[in-house]
Length: 283
Image (cartoon, rainbow, N blue to C red; front, side, top):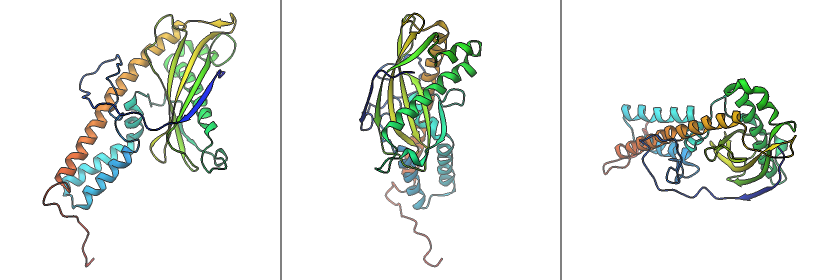
């Protein structure tokens, strides 16, 4: 994809949204349907681990310790789904763009962190893999058509603009994941769409950057913009529904995990008779 415009800026964390219940599943996104993580600190996973550690230092009993272990195990196993999935990104192997790609030492600059340009390159590589996997795994009947969207031959995708919001400076060594999602449900007749991009640091288990890509559908033979071809529209429509399902499902998981941690706090250190367990002086 060719980039017509690139803009980057350092951004703070996403603005908080009001909390809400995620008991009802719906497939149409509205402004009120923010993910459960929208109002949380970007470091919320690390915060949860610290909170559980504090609970354990106050002498949690066997049942409480088992519950803490279950929470920690779920975070360790599914942190990508909890962080990215709760925002609607699809993290399974058939749909993710980049998975556990190593950050190379040479990608750092004189300031000692990954150069800003690299984030756009990560997003570009992830976007190429994302579209190609749609053809390989989701719509194999149109595999050849999906392959050509990345070449100037027929109907292709052009990057009109990209905006990068840097969250924290990554350094080597680390690994990254790159996920793409549709910002809105595609409709017949549209000639462009917007993709949200999430670049995740494995070392810190949180977003290193969030990007917004404006994509135009272009017919290279006719030399003009065209509407989304039917094969793209169908796949994007199904993808949108899966994104909404993922956001609801994983937001519910996050809410439940946070409730479990709060219950642990109430039953361990956050009570009037709590005494911190410092170990035996004679041991």
